[in-house]
Amino acid sequence: MATTSIHGTAQKVLTPETLRSAAKQSSRCLVVPVRLRRAIKKYLRGPNSYSSLPKLEEPYLKRKVLRLSQSLNEIKSINLQLTATTSKELVEDPLKSAEQSKRWKIKSSYGDIGLKYRDDETVAYVAARMPAVYSACYRVLKEVRRRLPGFSPSRVLDFGAGTGSAFWALREVWPNSLEKVNLVEPSQPMQRAGQSLIQDLKDLPAIHSYESIQALTKNINKSGRQHDLVIASYVLGEIPSLKDRVTIVRQLWDLTQDVLVLVEPGTPEGSNIISQMRSHILWMEKRKFRKIKDGTNEASTDLTARKSGAFIVAPCAHDGACPLEKTGKYCHFVQRLERTSTQRVYKRSKGEPLRGFEDEKFCFVAIRRGQRPREPWPLDGMKFETLKEQRTSRKLEDLEIDYDDLIKSEQVDVIPYEEPDPVTYDSDFMEADDVDDNEKVEEEEETTRADLGGGWGRIIFSPVRRGRQISMDVCRSIKPDASEGAFQRVVVTQSKNPTLHHQARRSFWGDLWPF
Image (cartoon, rainbow, N blue to C red; front, side, top):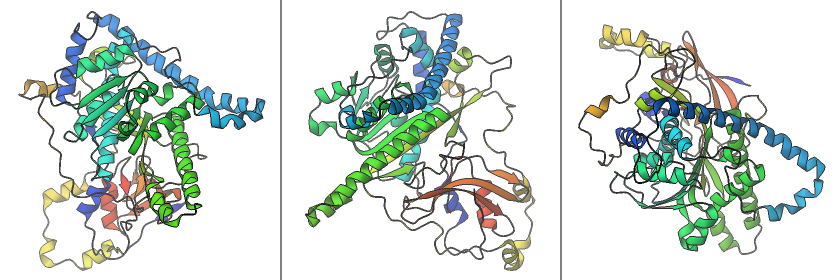
């Protein structure tokens, strides 16, 4: 892994505030919306018109939460065997590749791995896992919105919708643009739970539920099958067959008119799934693009070529092969969330008091149709003053010391996700306030964005601070067209570049880096 030091000499255009606003993608600690916490509490009180399940006693539900956690861990063990099994099949049957053209027509269904979401498992999922899955989906969709400020989906497909975690996140990120949402979820208890959780919300888009992709395509005409956004969260890992997994992702891509988002748990297995699906879609679109360019009609070919193709919106800074594949590391991120009161009641800790927060690790990829825009790199033509030059150019009035600012500047920022836990958060503190559950969320103004043309790298792991030197592991594009990437160590020192050092001190795992 290469080591790169950033040097520079006098700033011209970009201010530290603009730089920090564009680079910031992560959130310190997410608070689950009051309306969702209230809906979960109401659902757990049960029974209601959507579920035949009586109210579960606390000890029983705690055991169900524990069993659900064990079942999800068993899924990881199954995924570990998939690669070896697939390789063995290809060795035993080399002619199997000749049947590739037929395998995409398989009608597959997911979830057949011994984990059945019946009524009690569904209640356990809502109590223990739904807030964390929501937080990961919200973080991912919020970044898609920041990177694509003109993108406002009206038609959405949520594959593996479960109890509606992604739908709640969609409502928070794009509250005013959703018109139609199609949900694909084969579990009837999950569907009933999702309906129960949203029954008190108003101004909902048109929502239709289906048990499979085949049922969706059968009941919708061809023009209605295209969705502005397709999201599949925490579901591909539940598909036991690698062949079926690729089949489903191809089907989802065919139903995508603009952006496809895949989210998986932040484990080596989840990262491997995301990497495989990312590579397959990019390979498929590159092959299609080459075929179009080989056409004879140049006018129509040029128009079709501009509409074809695919590029990565996030988290990758490029569309090339993943540089982490042979490093023993895996690409994942983390979102800290304050635990809800229901999570604190039903989750167990190993002999220690349960923390007031939890860190949800996740992997994701957001892919958009079309050709990557050609934007200038963030630091093109930029020069930065050294610390010595900044001090030389100071005016006499700038030498007056503001002791409050001095104390703040000398405080050391705690690296996120490694801080101690001295505080027990109460995530339900807002429930005493007069909050309207049906009030629409106002879209916040975001004046600065990180262009997709290249030059913005991604901080893969937590930055390491040693005195006045900060080291960061950055995955970045090494070509202006973002066709190839590299994983590098970036070192920033205060003396040589105080402006970027100031930015580095406030950067976290998952943020962008303009280099």
